[in-house]
Amino acid sequence: MAAAQIPPEPAAGTPSPDEPVSAARPRRSKKAEAQRRGRSRTPRLSYDDWVDGALALLAREGVGASRIPRLCSELGVTKGSFYWHFDDIQQLMEAMAERWSAVQADAVRALGAVDSIPVEQRIENMTSLLVDQSTWIVEATVREWARNDPKVAGAVQALERKIFEIVEQTMLELGFDATQARLRAGTMVYLGIGLIHGRGSLPTPTTEEAKAVIELLTTPSQPTGRSPQ
Image (cartoon, rainbow, N blue to C red; front, side, top):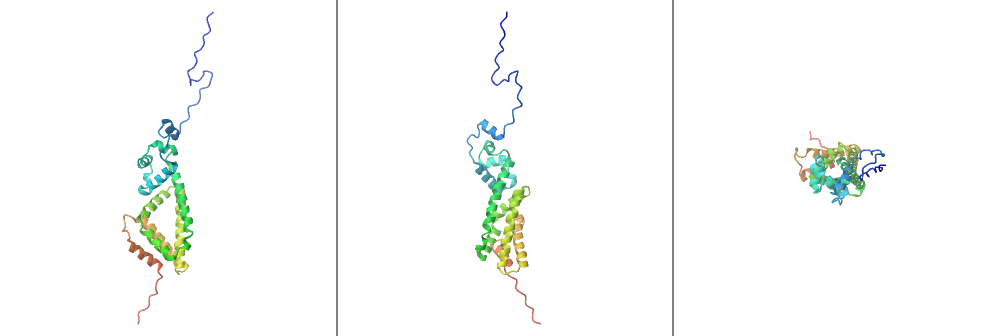
């Protein structure tokens, strides 16, 4: 009688004929791929480093700079470092929106204590903001970003409402009635928005010119006397 044939032992990792073939292996996340390749076992940048660096680049170059290759080049790291923390650029943008919104919420809370600042100091602070071109660049970038991000848009709106309230209150303290205070506050706030969007195409006001505009808006109109008959 011929000896029974012993089937060869399957190689490691080979499914048994009696076992169902497993489903296709699930697609690895980009983070897992980065870990597997060994490129990012010790990430050079933290999560906060990425968010801070991306926000700084956005402020300098606009929303168009928020691309993975550009960010990696700016921060001096590989894509593996990016994928250690984020699945894609949208996830980073969401983290940036969360961070920026939190910062603006803190700013709104801080502005709530403006009543303790003398009116004259408030007016001086307004003048400084009007001529600070670095502020214009950041504001313009954030407004562009807000068009496509509801979270950022909400933070911008909350901050603008608070600024308007502060300017309006300042006008009331200067002695203007409610109607004049609202009109002058609106003029000043829209002036700031106009400077943001008009940069590069309209003349940039000097500090002296900004002070003259603020003085014009914060000084009550003098009644004109009639010429003698």
